[in-house]
Amino acid sequence: MNRKLLLSITLALLLLLAGCSRKELKVPLEDIGMVGIMAFDYMDEDQMKLTVAIPQYSPEAQQKTQIFSVSTDLVSNGIVEIEKLSDKKIVFNQLRVVLVNEDFARKGEIQNVIQHLYRNAEVGNKVLIAIVKDKAEAIIKGNYPDKPNINIYINDLLEPSINTAFNPNTNIHDFMYTITNPVTDTIIPYLEKRDDKIEIKGVAVFKGNHMHEVIKPEEALIVQALLGRKSLAPLHLDLHEGYGEEKLMIDLIESSIKMQSNKNVDSPKLIIRLKIKGTLSEYKGSREYELNTIESISRLEKDVNKQLEEDITKFLDKLKNMDVDPSGLSEKFRMYYHGKWTTKKTREVISKLQTEVHVETSIISTGTLK
Image (cartoon, rainbow, N blue to C red; front, side, top):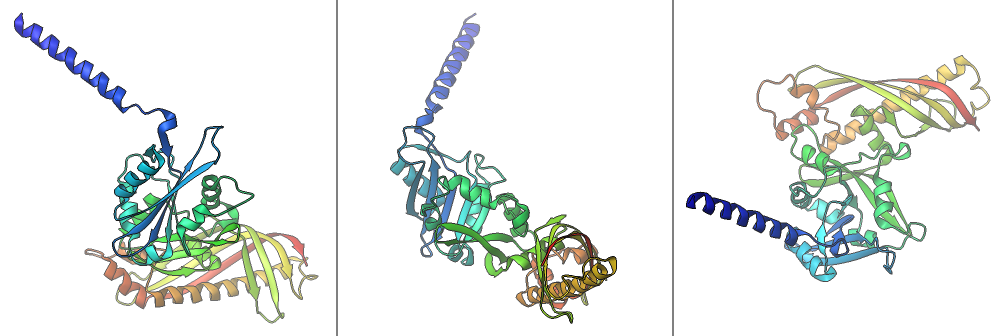
């Protein structure tokens, strides 16, 4: 009986203590700071600037967003300092965007902070990442008169959109996958603040852990096509095929791609066949009054094919000179390789890669031609 009584008392005490612990863990909502955006700026080898934006949901709040910046050596230490400044418990359940300035990315420091967030159970895998041209802190603290909520503004800017379909929409899961994958290089949207606007000016291409180069939106669109993206951003082309200066825009593009390698890592060759289908939404040039027959549209399609083949080949040569592989072309050789594939092997294949590009364009309708 004594043993049973002792066991009952022990269980009762444990339940009581557990109940007390749960009460101690509860924090009133008004004492919680739910971070919407984090920004990292490079200071020196030992210090970084950490900035957070915390939306204010109280109708009595004078500002819709609280912004705090601290200098720190570790992300966790910086969060502790921000908690002291805000007098709130900082949580990351509502984190939507991580901004990293260009210096920080070029120094190769980005993997450390993203990895820290990736391991945090509060942070979702779909948190978006962007590289900022100058100071990431300035992006958050900027004045945007027609965008009263900075958290919503930047998140919406980076979300998938047909007009910015060149944007890879990189999230922290994508980053951790590509940064540790020997057959591809990481790509992240590149932002620039212009007066009271934020623009996606291009895409940052990484080489290993370091940001290497920024490619233009039209080049980033080629990367997305090579990756097999089905819907592409509107395509602007300048044609030089014997009809003088011609400018055109193809919209509502659907694409498909097939690649065939020779399976030879010592003398790699890749045949790329890209099919695109879309609407000729605008045209300016000497053929504007001729594009009303099947024959004339067919001739234009052939000219578009030739121009795109030249543009894609030129861009692939640029990537070859940069010694990077953001489209994962080396995967077409890795799958036939017997042995361990390394990043070094990817560099070797890309440096020797010969490509043959074929484009097939279908213009299914025409819009405004002028």
